[in-house]
Image 1 (tube, each protein chain N blue to C red):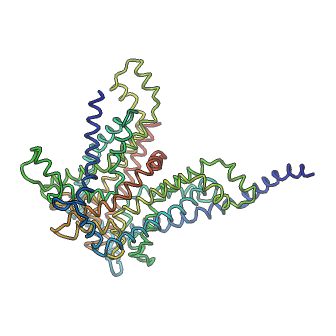
Image 2: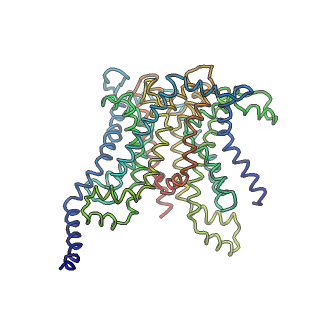
Image 3: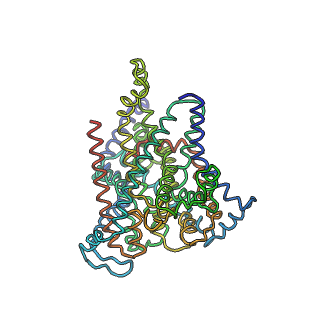
Length: 262
Length: 310
C-alpha cells in the first residue's frame, strides 16, 4: 500500500474505534449547549448513592484479586515444583473451567450459594469470580515458576528454608511480572463483570457499579437519563483505560502467554 | 580442619534437602494445591452435577423441588420462544464470526509491519477492548439513541437518512445491525492482538525466500501466512463462535431482545426462564443442552486442529 493511502485509511479506522469513547466523555459533561458537571452530581445521588456501589465494587475487586493471587500462586508453585497424587487430574479440571460457559453454571451456583448461606453476598460472588479466573491465573503462575531456575530455590532450601520459606523469600520476587498480569486480569474481570452479579446479587444496596448503572437503562421505562448514564459509563471506563495505558506491557504478556488457548 | 568442614557442609546440606524433598513432596504439593482443589470441587464440579440434577426436577425459586424428569426437556421442544432464540443465535453467530474475523485479520495485517506511528494505531484499535463489555454496551446505547447520540445527526448531515432512526428498538434488521456493529467495535482489537502474535511468529526469512523466488504478495499470503497461522486462526474462531453462541449483554442491555423478540438469544431465554418465570429446573435443562452442544463443538474443533497440525 502506498504511504499516504495507508495513513489515511489507518486514520479513518482509528476514528471508528476511538470516537465513541471520546464522545462518551464529551456527552457526560455537556448539557444542552453548555458544559456542566450536573450529570456527575446526579450520578453521585443515583439510587443508593454511587458511593455505595463503588464501595461494593471495590470490596468485590479486593476479594477477587487477593483470592486469585493467593490461590493461583500456591497452585502454580505446586504444579511447577512438586509431584503429588491427582496432579494431572487437577490441572485438567482447572483448564476444563474454560470449556464450561459462564451463564449455564450460574444457575446451579445461585442455588448452591443459598445452601452455603452466601446468597446475595459479595463474598460468595468473589468466590465464583475466583473460580472463573483460575484457568488463566494458574496456567500463568505455573509458567512463571517454571521459568525460574530450580537452583534458586534449592539454594534457599540448603540455607535452611522450608519450601514455604523458599517460595516467599526467593521465588515470589522472581515472579512479580506474572503476579501483575494475573492481578490485572482479575481486576478487570471483577470490576467489569455484569452477568454474575446480576444473577447472584439481589439487594439494591449490594449491587456493583455495572449492575447499578445498567439499571438506569433497564428500569426507567421511556425516561432514560442519558447524560447521567454516560457519566456512569465514563466513571466505570476511566480506571480501565488508565490501567491499559499504564500497564500495556502486562496486557500483551497475558495474550502472548498462550493462556487463552483453552 | 575448617577447610574440610566447609567442603563437607554443602554436600551434607544437599543430602539433607534431597531427603526432605523425598520425604514430603507429595504432602507439600497437595497442601499448596489444596485451595485451588477446594474451589474447583465446590464451585465447579459440584454445580456441574447440580445443574444436571436440577434439570430432572421441577425446581421453583422458593420451596422444595420435586422430581419430574423428563418434563423439563420435553417442554423445551414445545417452547416457540426457545426455537426462535436458537435460530436467531445461530444466524447471529454466523454473521458475527465472518465479519469479526475478516475485520480483525485485516487490522492485524495492517499493523504487522514496523512503520512510524504503527504503535499508536495498534493502541487505538485495541482501546475499546480495554473498556468492560457491559460498559461498552451501555456506551453504544447512548451513542445510538436519538436523544443525545450523534449518529442520527451525522447520517442526516451526510444525507444517508432523511429522518432520525431508532437503531435499537424500531426495526429488527437495524437492531440486529446495531448489535453486530457493537461487537465488532468492542472485540476487533482484542482478536487483532491474538492474530498479530501469530503473524509475528512467522519467520521473515520465509517471506524473503518467497520474494526471491518471484512469488506475489497474494501468493505468499496463501502459501505461507495462511497455513502457518492455522492454529491461531482456529483459536480465534473458537473464541468468536463460543462467545457469540453465549451472547447476552449485547441483547439484554442494548436491544432488550427486541423489537418483539427478534434479537432474543439463547442465554437470554435461560436467564428469563430462571429469574423472571422462576422456573429453575427448566432453565437448568436448557443449560445442560447448551453445555453439551458447546463441549461437542469444542471437541470437534480440537480434533480438527489436531488433524490439520499433525
